[in-house]
Image (cartoon, rainbow, N blue to C red; front, side, top):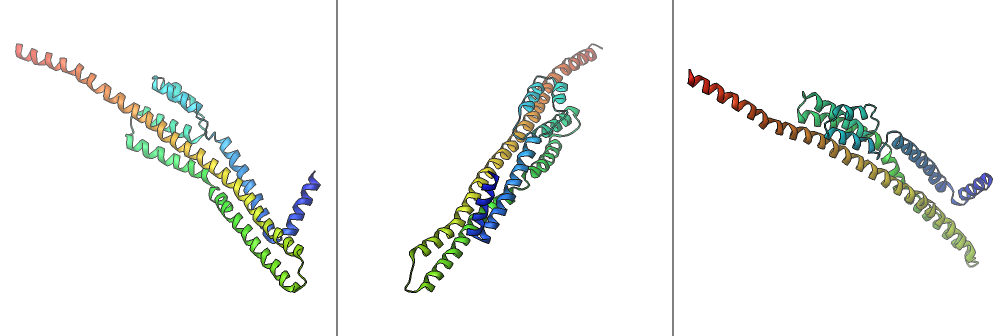
Length: 238
């Protein structure tokens, strides 16, 4: 089976010439890059938010130590951003704006690392069909030159053969561009979902901390007010 595959590739290269060879190299590079991104996304748990959701649930139910323990070995960008938000919020020393800036810095670096290679895949998806079209134009030029050289003894099979060989390069370019474009769209969608998850989960922790602080202030005032009233009454009695 491998021999047949190698024979097929060799025939394509002979028929399509250097343009098909370039498209084949681009396809090998794109496949290697796609496999690397798949491994990276799997290793860094991109799109897997189960642990983050459980930690967030524990945090909302006032089990902060358990929530932070769940994220102690954070691997995904969401887990790292959420763990950082919980750690800074629990300390009570950092302002909300400072926490947001720190989380944004961490998330930006992680997402940028995950986004590496996307431009290369996008360039391949755009260049491959253009290379195929370029090969087709060159093939058509060669076919019509042969037609002109034949003069009156025109053989339609020569023209037809030159045309289908020329169109082969366009087919190869499209065969590379379409799957690369689809996979790139899938990667970008998962990365956008990761970005949205970071924003929503970290905002939920910060909002929860702000609401708890706002709820505690009136109770403090109510406890202080009776003391002040008793102090005032005692001064009047004296």
